[in-house]
Amino acid sequence: MTPKLKKLKNQVIVITGASSGIGLVTARMAAKKGAKLVLAARSEEALRRLVEEIRQEGGEATYLAIDVSEPTAARTIAEKAQATYGGFDTWINNAGVSIYGKVEEVPLEDMRQLFEVNFWGLVHGSLEAAKHLKQKGGAIINVGSILSDITAILQTIYSASKHAVKGFTDGLRMELEMDGAPISVTLIQPAAIDTPYTVHAKNYMEREAKHAPPAYAPETVAQAILHACVKPERSIVVGGGGRAFISMEQWTPRLLDKFMETSFVKQEKADYAPRPLHQNALDKPMGALEERGNYPGHTRETSFYTQAVTSKGPVLKAALAVGAGLALATWISKQRQHSGNGYRTVYPDDYDRSRSANRSQLGSAATASSSHDYDPAGHDHRYSEVHRDDLP
Image (cartoon, rainbow, N blue to C red; front, side, top):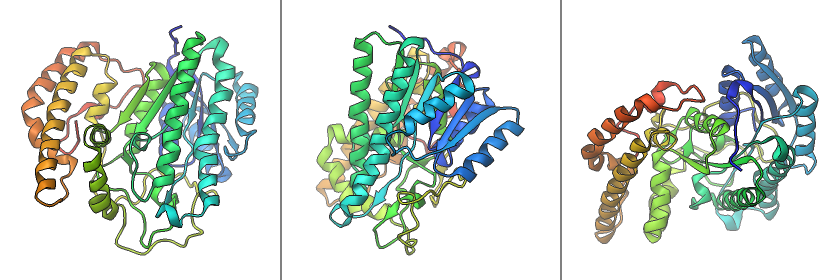
């Protein structure tokens, strides 16, 4: 049965991990579109301030300070939604935390706790949502990562948890489809996003953690999530840089390994000492209504790639596929040439030179599909602009 999803203004949306980063931006954006919100996180003061902010701007929201790693948390959140709004239409599993460091040096108890949040919290939330939505229909949106498909060196256990999220999400989707349940199940796969992710991580490295380039704004993820609230999607990769890394894993995995070992490992370390180990969101709440993190480079405020793949226009999608394929082939060729002469970093931004020939084709496709653009989440039109430093 094809899920029929409501317009945002008619939805009640549950968001976990709502006190910072992607969850916070998504909550603010959804509230402005008229959705009623049930917000969950551990940081009660941050949630209270967020709900007050939303209400002052004319929105409707309630909150629950709760740890999603607790097995009964999802049921409690669902009961809050039922008591306040009579139920919910979309459940967004966003809560998560990371660990940086060599996997042999990370304590097993930290690994287990990370899985309790990133994986089991999402499993409990998804199953509770499915139970409530089987009759009325709706959407389950799980925030994974491009690390659901690849592994970032020194973020091994986080990557493993996101691999598990993808496996569970795909299996849940198939089983619900097999049963004819009117539920859309979407996996959101962000690339590096400029949020407090790095400063909230438990860090066992000798230097502070930071994102390797390219990094995107949390708004790009929030827009993809809100798109999935109203239009069934199997999965959405956020950021062309992420799509490029996934393609490398598929086509040149050994080359990606070498890139991780020689370049990426340096790029994810800042040039200053780390915070004290006890300052981390794995062990205690750290949400403080912070949207952005410590990324020192240029944050890409838009993703042409993600806007295109969530477009309704088939012409634009086809043009994107052709352009991205040609660009990837060029990049892989360059990577192989450089690896043969001694490895050096070739950033995904080098796609731009090979993409220039495809600009007119993509521009024509965008024009051809503009009269059919699907904008259910009320996207800021800056999201569809083409920027040179974005990836295909």
